[in-house]
Image 1 (tube, helix red, strand yellow):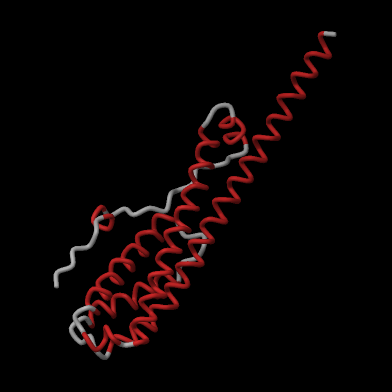
Image 2 (cartoon, one colour):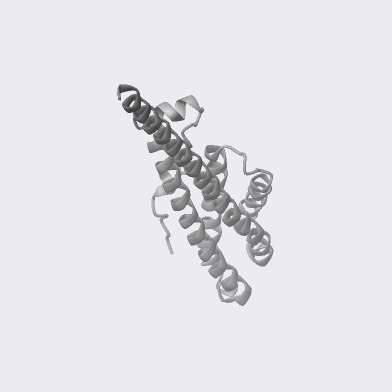
Length: 186
């Protein structure tokens, strides 16, 4: 009888371990899926940038440096793979967002450009993509949170440590100034 109870306890522990392992695998896949979603949206934005730069370049002689820097950062971002560290990727994308914001503010200073149908369309597309990027970041960070909770919580951390499941990094803004609403003076 004692052996049967002991066997039942061992079976319950093994089944629980299998359940935790499967949860860890699921969470790791959710994190990968989330990062892939961010990657897709960032590539959409990167593909939009040359059109935006081309549309405003002729008008914005004074902002040439900003446009050139934006083009350089786009090339750098496009060269990053899905295996790039989220913190590095986030830093580059944060710079791109900042420069795009400057370009959009500068567009307001050019009445002809502001009224240009192509620029208006590009602005709308960019606004939608920025919204989609924000949603993808939320999804990714939620998946990271769930993964990290399971990796760090007891007793699932025992299974996670044994099978070398690691915490994932959040995709977040590191520059405090990027969190603030930009000041626009007209």
